[in-house]
Length: 87
Image (cartoon, rainbow, N blue to C red; front, side):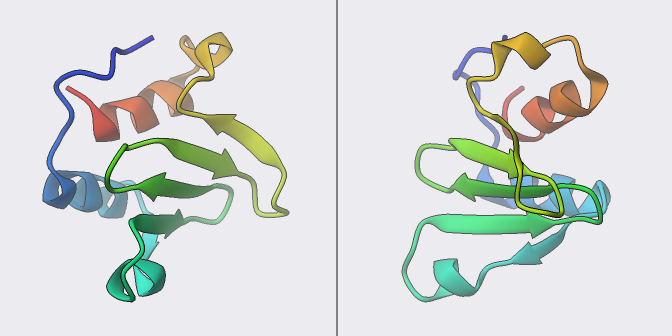
């Protein structure tokens, strides 16, 4: 698992999510929360801009993973998401 060191800056995270096809929902963040959600056809990612902890759900709301899902370390889509947040 990637370590929680060398995290990317928020602007870089947001740009990376958009490049991967996520539409950003920053309404809560703009209202003072530290959470932003990236919405995509098959996955949604909600993450804390403070801790960079994240949760991933499918389009039905079923939990797929979070920032501690080490069992997914070798799964391409999960590695791609980890690379969004950390170097």
